[in-house]
Length: 226
Length: 402
Ligand SMILES: Nc1ncnc2c1ncn2[C@@H]1O[C@H](COP(=O)(O)OP(=O)(O)OP(=O)(O)O)[C@@H](O)[C@H]1O
Ligand SMILES: [Mg+2]
Image (cartoon, rainbow over all chains, first blue to last red):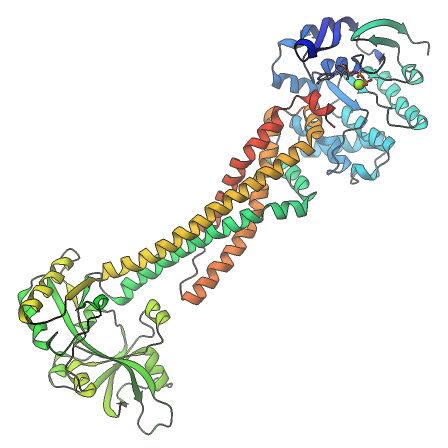
């Protein structure tokens, strides 16, 4: 599904240059649930952003389904983000001015899906994450855990093959975190590929494989004991 | 993205900052109001001018008087009744020519009436005046050349004057006293001959044979000659001929004969409205510029505030042009809101001006469309920079922004 070779990302130039990713080569199979760990600044988010086509690597190759991603233009990358990936962020990143139904619909709006189908799918997904009764509420009225459920519903709306989550439980208490991980396990069971950055070992345990980053490189890989 | 979705998202975004939106659009509203006023005054003025031409009479008409600008006044020797006949005979360019002796504030009343006399403007002239001024008669007839020759004590009342003297509308054939001299009403004109004259003076007009008026006012002075040239092109020639003949017949005169065509007179009015249009146009331009900069400023603030949101939109599949389009739409929508208030303000203002200047209030669908067109244009121009800035963000960096 995902294969990177010599992936390198350098921010800035000259003496101020920061190497965020240093020659990363690895493969993630379809349906795999991978956790990414490592100290702050080790390049975890950068890695996830490059995988999600939110930014381009400075060097190296990235194949998504055997397709060379670095060769694609901006609009094609936007199309990939829209169709192939679902993002979940630590800070949820919901639009505060629009109700949660509209928030979940958003990717479909850019995909050009008709309004009726959009509403049906968004309503169904919100019901699935347990928020079917709050469609017209705006995000600020929801708790952190509820907001993250909305974000997961949004990530799923385009039925993406890959879920990319950057510290999805970073802002949640442990009980809520486990509930969210329950949802992730469901997605995993559906056969979706999941790459999740986390600082918490007991969250990383939900994954099948853990990649340990240090200074932009994968220094250790372990198969989860769970 | 579909247009309906764009509109809905834009509406939701603007509604979240209602007060900000309304304050921002104030400048645009003033600018658009000024645009409406410019168009309304321009069109209203033009309509008045056009109706003046129709109501005041022929576009071929002209007027010969002394040079008022130099403080001159006509004397008994300035114009003679014979001059008129001679000019008409000698100049092929002159079609009609009417001498005018007029008196201001002339008291006209009904016999045996307790009602107060009505002060009016008495115009002594010849039937040729009907070719110069448009004087449609509601009833009766205008006096004839024979009436002039016979010093007939007859009078044609302006519609407004007739209504004041004879509210029942039975003026025709009745006697009136013009400064205690009895005269018979032989005609009544249709009400209000000229909007412009009506607005400028409260005068009510009475027309009578010049011979009778000169007796009545005990004067031989003719104040001016009003004429009509044979064609539009012949007007300058007609004026020149009149002046040449008058100068020849009155070699010792100290006054300067001056002619003005109806067109020149209207051009003067046109110039005045033109200046007004220019001033308000400048106000419109400045207000739109200031308003546009205000919109740009608030859009730049919005783009900065919503940097992470832009990153998110890109993460879920928005292309650069979607982002550009969305922020442009918000800028245009802001300006359209301003345009809406501006149209209300401008329409109110134009109506007020029309009301007091007695102009037709000219706010057409086209004016409103033009106003909204202007508003959209301002939104596009001043929204472009903030929107393209929003579209230039890298998704990862926008998402990292705090
Ligand atoms: N836009 C940027 N410009 C310059 N340096 C950057 C930029 N983005 C990230 N970096 C640097 O790249 C390195 C890796 O950052 P990254 O966000 O991937 O770390 P991380 O492992 O996700 O850290 P954390 O656990 O704190 O989220 C850091 O040193 C960071 O300062
Ligand atoms: Mg990070």
